[in-house]
Amino acid sequence: MFAIGLTGGIGSGKTTVADLFAAHGVTIIDTDQIAHRITAPNGAAMPLIAREFGPAFVAPDGSLDRAAMRALVFTDDSARARLEAITHPLIRAETDRERQAATGPYQMVVVPLLVESGNWKSRVDRVLVVDCSVETQIARVMRRNAFAREQVLAIVARQATREARLAAADDVLVNEDAPLDVLDARVRQLHTHYLSLANAPRP
Ligand code: ATP
Image (cartoon, rainbow, N blue to C red; front, side, top):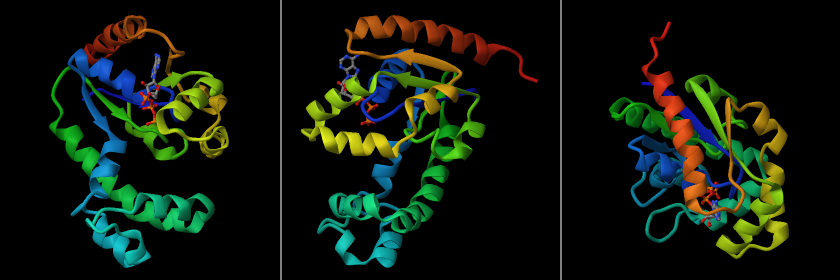
């Protein structure tokens, strides 16, 4: 099925935009939600994480201790690589399963780190980047997560630059703070375009 990869920096509005596409009947496959599910109690990644990192990273309910793991991988790249070696194949397999089961005119796969993790671009037909200024990202995430400015800046610094993301885009959806109906007008335009691409004969 024709697939759009949706990406954008932290707080750019990926979930907000995906929800608007979903309201038009598009199947959304959110790799962030999948990542969350495999690290929930009884999640497929948990036995592997417990074996690799030890019980200190497992919460009492059997889910990932996110705060402990975040603190570890933020400064330790090899630990991040070990974690990703566990989670990425599981996320890919579950994404594939959901993609096979998807119905509707086309599907949208939300991948926050699509630009950073090279192989995603080849797995979708088109890349849609949700874009806003770094100042807007900072203000939103400070508000939403009660983070300090420096905390948000540290996360932004670990992600691809705005320029690198825009360079990878087939389409860009600008999402500065604005009422949802303004955003939805642009979503409708893109949706019409994607419908025609999805219905066009493919080589
Ligand atoms: P993350 O990468 O952190 O998961 P995201 O890219 O999915 O974030 P959202 O969760 O959709 O972004 O939006 C981040 C915050 O910004 C939310 O609190 C959301 O309500 C707000 N927001 C998104 N778009 C707009 C907008 N057009 N106007 C005002 N606020 C917005």
